[in-house]
Image (tube, rainbow, N blue to C red):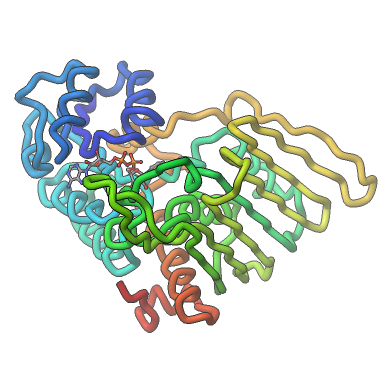
Length: 359
Ligand SMILES: NC(=O)c1ccc[n+]([C@@H]2O[C@H](COP(=O)([O-])OP(=O)(O)OC[C@H]3O[C@@H](n4cnc5c(N)ncnc54)[C@H](O)[C@@H]3O)[C@@H](O)[C@H]2O)c1
């Protein structure tokens, strides 16, 4: 039984994913301790989960030191992921970290190196690897269904930045988030392209902010926003395929739309997730006929199970190990630098340190 301590009791833990997933895994893990700097959130979460008062912490160092915690789940703002993960490494405890791994490639790579030195299992929540449709697409694409791939076109657009009265939360502040939709939605979409067997060689990106001020969470006064509402990336992939990624949180009328289109020598594969509903089709290049593809049951997965398995030394080709997050961060940094300097950036230059984002 792996005893998990969670740091950051916000929406991704309490509403969207982690708690719900751990609750399905009571045969292999239990949540024994929680931490949040916000005492109200901490106690609401603790009451909901039945965590005794002595295992509710406001300082992550106390949670990591707690002898009832075997592994640490980090789901705080992006700006403190690496610091908390490094503290887990120092204590010899495996960890999972939410995406993006960190604020930039330099700190992300450093985390990776110290983790490797100590041989600590480390996991990154690249959640799209745990959805059945992308897993099935990977199986088909790597199995050769598309032949040579010419184009990969990805779209992830939402109206979440247009919610009436939405405050200037941490994700609208560059010093806490790193970037806007680029690292938020982009982490997943960049990873999906890599998950389909493609590596990025060079990117050119543009970004913009439409809603330049939002109400402060504390005072309600309008305060500046400095993270991107939209980002368009065009990329050359190592395979010579071209790639486009469109990201937006100002897409009026779209609660959530994700499209992944692959154009290859055998035809066109199109995945659509519209407001949570999936579809996948393949259109044959010769016959022009379109078939629906549905993932068999074996492609279903639970992200948190993969983390607990990794802690127990079990992994497979889909496991989102930290290294995948580090690769993803290099592409995010290249896109961010490209958008500020209006020129294409090689991923290899980010990795060897000849190019770096300025923060
Ligand atoms: N995998 C996904 O699909 C997905 C979806 C949404 C969010 N996320 C990621 O999850 C993370 C959290 O996002 P969220 O939407 O839950 O945000 P949130 O604001 O709802 O929750 C974050 C929580 O972290 C707490 N916190 C901040 N610094 C802390 C610290 N030093 N110690 C303890 N607690 C601290 C905050 O008080 C807050 O309660 C982000 O990194 C985000 O990118 C991932």
